[in-house]
Amino acid sequence: MKTSEVVKAWGKILKGEQPSLSIELTKECPLRCPGCYAYDDAHLGGSGVTLRSLADRKGQDLIDAVLETVDRLKPLHLSLVGGDPLVRYREVEAMVPLLLARGTHVQIVTSAFRTMPLEWAKMDHLNVVVSIDGLQPDHDIRRAPATYDRILKNIAGQKITIHSTITGQMMKRPGYLREFLEFWTPRAEIHKVWFSIFTPQVGDQMPEILTPAERKQAVKDMLELRRMFPKLDMAEGLIRQFETPPHNPSECVFSLTTQTLSADFKTKVTPCQYGGKPDCSQCGCIASMGLAAVAAHKLGGVIPVGAIFKASIKIGQAWPKPAEPPQPLDQLRVLQ
Ligand code: SF4
Ligand code: SF4
Image (cartoon, rainbow, N blue to C red; front, side, top):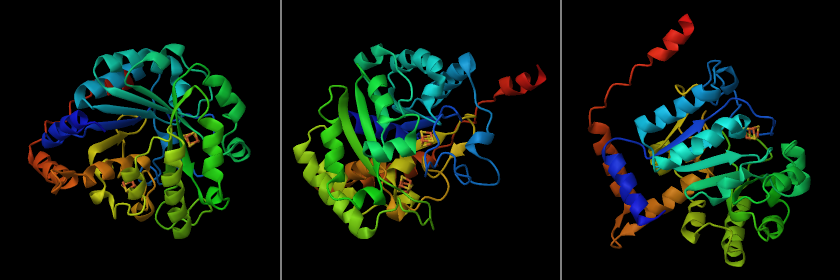
C-alpha cells in the first residue's frame, strides 16, 4: 500500500466510512470447490439465509446496483467476487470502465472458467485475480471445469494475479510451493502471485487446516521463495503477520476497513468476507495480513499506524450517520 493510499483511507475512516468494498456479484458459480466458504450454510449468518437463497441481479439492473452502491459508499478499492463474477461477464465488462472512471481500484476474483476482454490487460487500476488451488493434479480435481488447461487458454494475453490458498495437504509435501511458483511465474500473463493460508471456521476439523508446525513451515517457505521468485508479491512484513494473526475481528484492520455486501446488495457478510464465524486465530487471509503489516508500521519509528487507524475508527463511528437512502425501486418492482 502506498503512503498516498494510506492517507486517503485514513480520511475515509475519520469520516466513519470503510475504504474498501467487496461485492458478491452473483450467487452463481459453475464450480463446486470443496471448502468453498461462499456457499456454506453459515456464510450469511445462518437462519436459513444462504448465498443461493438470495435474489441476485442481472443485466442493466446489476450494473445500476453496483454503480449506485459505489457512488454512495465511494470505496477506494472494490473487489468483485462471487459465486464467480464472470458468470455475469457482459455486465462486468460494461461496468469496469465506468468504475475505473470514478477513481476506484477494481479487483475481479475469478476461477478463469471463461475468457476475459483483452483490453483488461491494459487497464490501470484493474486487477484480475485467478484462484488456483495448488498443482495441476490437485487443482483439477478440486476446481473442474476451471482446470489448468482451461485457465491457460483463458488467460492468454491477460495480466493476471494468481491467488492460491495453502492447505494442510500441500504442506505435507515438501517443496510444493516452490513447484507451484516454478510452473506459474515464468509465464508472461502472470504479473503477481499471492498466497493465503486456509482459514477455518471456529470448530472446523478439516484436512485443509494447517497444523501449527505446517503454518510455521509455510511462513519459512514464503520468506525464502519471495527472494527467489520476484513475482511472489508478498513483503517480508506481510508474511511474518501469518505468525500472529488477529485475535478476533475487532483486532483485524481488514475487517474494520472493508464492507462486504452479498448478491442482493442488502445482506452484509460479516465479520469479513469469510462470513459465519471464522477462526481468526488461524486466519490466513493475505488481505488481513497485508493490512496488519501496514498497521504494525511505526510512524516516525514510534506510533504504530494501527493505533492511529483504530483511534480514527472510533472517531469516525462517533459521527452521526446519514440515514440509509430509501430504495423504492424494489417495492415498485414487486408491484409490476
Ligand atoms: S469458484 Fe469460488 S465461489 Fe465458486 S465454488 Fe469455487 S470457491 Fe466457491
Ligand atoms: S480476515 Fe481473518 S482475522 Fe480478519 S475477521 Fe476475517 S478471519 Fe478474522
